[in-house]
Amino acid sequence: MLKRSEKINAIERDFRLNYHSVLLPHLKRMEFIRVILYFIFLICALALVSASVMLCWAFFNSASTEPWEYLLAIIPLIFIFSAHRFWELILNIILKKKLLNYILVPFKTFKADKIFDIPSIQLKESKIIEKYVFKINPERIDGVYRGVNIRFNSALLFDIVSTFSNGKRRMKIKNVFSGYIVEMDMNKTFSGHTILESHLIHTDESFLDRFKENYYEMEEVELEDPDFKKHFTTIKTTDQVEARYLLNPAMMEKLKDMESAFSRMFKLTDFRLSFLDKKVMIAMKVYSANNMLKLCSLNKPLYKQDKEICAFKDTLLETIEIVDELDLDEKIGTY
Image 1 (cartoon, rainbow, N blue to C red):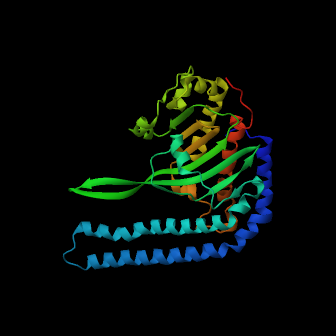
Image 2: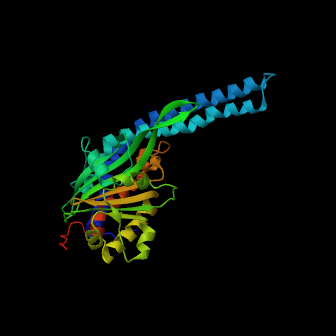
Image 3: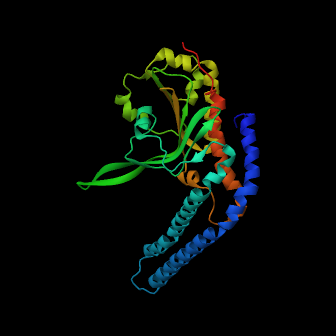
């Protein structure tokens, strides 16, 4: 875990007080919503179990039933898991809409913004986001920490992919990114563009390989620290001098520590950074979108879910702590 500043520790203390005085009463009042949704899920589960039993009975009493057909009776049971995830997702959507700003009270200037969104053109210019057609933002949070404007989005990005089968063209929607996208101001104007990417789970083709024609004269950065390349497998820039000035030994040590800490905490598959036009944009691709969207569980009373809510709070705390780790509020001199 990254070393926390006193200001982050103060937010942590305020959150504990806020949880008991503000959040807990709201959670107790909203418990009936969880109970209703859980009851609906139980009805769905009972109906699916009944369907499975009826299929087994029908197959057992049929003289022409093949042994493999009994496997069809398992299908309704598989849908029970999907039904649970669906109603849990509905619960989390409702709770985030009602409670998110109460959770953000200790963060002072931060608020949930229904309208705010990081523009698509900025995402594409960053060169760290895959090609996508549309996106869903479950959370849109913005605020100021140590004078640095921070825009935090959880994001699901989707692309429409064409496939050919038996001479027919088929279109399907593919989820290309699930995770967090964070944009922060940096007290330095960049004339060039530098990007870094850490592949935490190996894939045969980097998403960046598909966009080499869009690098607009980007080239590999030559750095003296071989260990840094173990953390960030892709380092590209349009300005070698500026990139080496930005990625000085102190900055590289901080980025290595941050990459290691974030990959453990958030279970990331990719960690990417873009330094462009006085801003740093960070994309953190998570292993499971379900964990990213989760605030509360469907199976447990809301007023006993402090661990789940604290996990969401920790995600925000660790994110804004990037300001401390990279000293984004400090004026960087010119080279």
